[in-house]
Length: 603
Image (cartoon, rainbow, N blue to C red; front, side, top):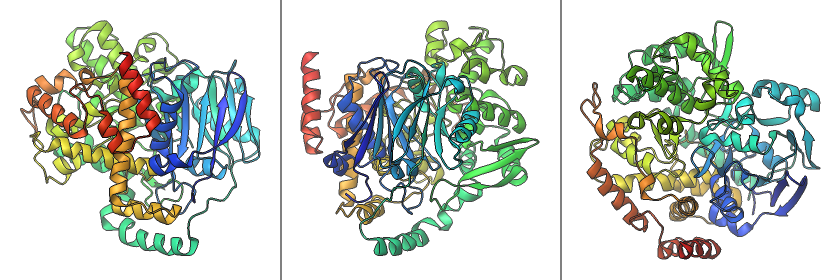
């Protein structure tokens, strides 16, 4: 098929074996690229019950269908594995140019398994793929790793994806970094690289990515950019980037503050304005993207791309830190050390509240700037208290108590949207395959931003969340960035232009459902059931104290009733186990269904 490269690179670090194989074209028709292809290979290759940090786990890098083409915002790279933080299947994407470079190197996927005897990096070009010694990079931050490898390879154009000390030290909230400020942050996926002694991957490609009809493709992309991309509706991506979400959340009373104790921040709008109006020096875009959502700022002598909305609030207001320079210092340390800022900010706020409540004293209180700035290094190197903080909020709450305000779902810390003012978001968190996630479905658009749906009811929310999950799954499998809000009809048109297929809008939705069910099959086989599709107790029992959502909680009985409705609409049983009939209806591969049946029959 056009726009694909036709090859997969498999790397077995234990043996040092590197081989190429043909991409399974029948999978491309059903699962596309990025998330879908990664899920399909992971489910094919590994036992979902394995230890995520064992040599048997895989880490899979899959570019999108449009990576390497001129289709805007289509250049991201998905990374898929079994999460060491949650035990679920997990995936996320990293921006920049790395996705296009994988295609230019000639691959639809890079699949890595095993464990090297010592620290290594992988060097990939269309002519060779080599496992090379990386002991000279041990302990180095992601920024140094990038600079040193480029110098060693004598190539400033090589694209590098790497882990910092946090990944090397198997920190459960470690993230993978590319091009200094592009991260795949959630689920501790960098710890999987660390467990394999894989420090980095350096890629240089020069192969062509072809499309179905280049002349009509060029004309159509120009038309689509004008009519559907470079429009006033998308101007926020360049002017403010993700920071605009914080204003909506604060106005809606659901901006997490002091470990989700309240949903109104007295400082967020000031920080937003200070960044954009006083500190912004320019914009940065990912490969081939016309939107340019990255904010490049300078605070005193600190240069940084960011902070994004999630970071600005989770390590800012959620920890009661209101000074921009302090937040930027913390953000830059996390980026270089390789720490997910959403989870890090959540953990720090949690231990601050633990002290406030007298449960356990880690020596830090809300607003304590001095000790706050020391924590990223302690966590990344597992120094002192950092050794326990590196395990995440769930671990801390199980050891010390305070489960009712431990803000996680399935072990993944909750991002910067409080569902007490967006009940659909609560259902989306609870049913997400990788734990608390705002990228699987985002009903906040209808409930808070556009205000077209009542946020304080569960009526209609099961279908709203399911539709959102199918949409995002299809979109992120084909490989379009979240910030381009194109519909499935246009997405199908782009796919057909690039590959020469005849996909319809209905096919897109069905594909999203098919891939979503792959994730559920994996998680069920890993032991997850209805009991895991829930929320922190704070959301059920502690009303928000102020703002538009004042006095609101998610009523637990109604939540459980809606969860049952969600399962029913999906064709799953009351424990959330997909039925054979629904899997056949949405055309999940026969081999997958048979594998799942064998598992269910063994229980």
